[in-house]
Length: 438
Image 1 (cartoon, rainbow, N blue to C red):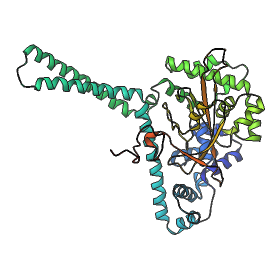
Image 2: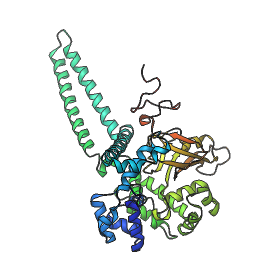
Image 3: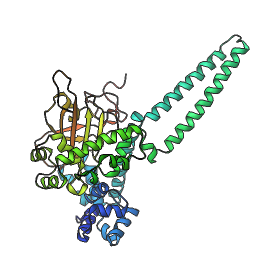
Image 4: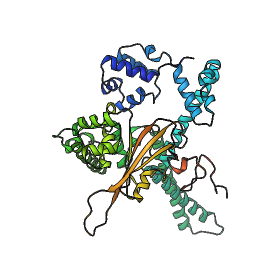
């Protein structure tokens, strides 16, 4: 079976030939530029209505973009094989296997996609159960109500006579608690049914801010000019936000505007063309600090980078205050991630720049370069405590033979499959860990 170009690469070729910008094509297809960038770099599979919409926007037939789609099958097989210990000679025979046994190859590829889907579902549900304040409060209310009903019922069930007045009180308590339990149950059921709606995704101020940045693709062109007005941008994007979220958005966009003033967009793009997504080189070019350069890389439009970069920022307590995840390197929504990340290690040795090659658990096909540094959030004053903030830039790294060690890390302990991790905070629901059976 001959090797062929992937659908995403064809889309990119057609777009360039037509002279259409990535942001313009994304707008025509009604998707975000960042998602189109992932498609064009073959990091997202495409089909169905979206493929038809993109083909229509490019003025071509959908079949012209999907010819040779067997290469997507080969890519899936290689991804599945990369997570095993198959020898190199076996990996090189993937095309032969797909050619001789196409049915088995398709079955294996479908299974791999189902595993990836289930893994993402587990990660999402686990993160939701851990950090969703509405869900936690509802469950606490239900448990408290059930306990109250059980307590009242146990008193009524005890042998001996109870005065009629007290019987009426206990019966009334059971009736009222049962009604409250029913209301809470209905509310919780309705809330869970809306799990995929926009309302359910924004249940905390930080969630609301994440949604704003995701919607904007982490790039705000109106803040790139010298005449930028932060208040007007906050008013535009924060009209439907809570008061706490608008306050956080104002802080985030004020920092964005300061970063843009230190590293102008066009000059930043020129340096990136020469050095790539290197925060140290960018910081040197503009005589600024490394965290500012990291944030600026994360703020670049998708067409300004060869590959999208991720960014995580946490305060001195380890609480995530900003997150730009990557598809192959997700970040927990509110809680702390894997304690093996250099994001947290940097807090122990401020101003020291960490650089590590990482593989996230059960995502062995993807490697990422993590660069982390912690520094004071403002200049220290004599006799005052200094507070630190840690940044970690996440850059996709090709899988090449290198003598540099690759560090295996997780997302969160609850869904981490490494059984022998010495810094585990809680037991995993995926595998048995040491000491799990008592």
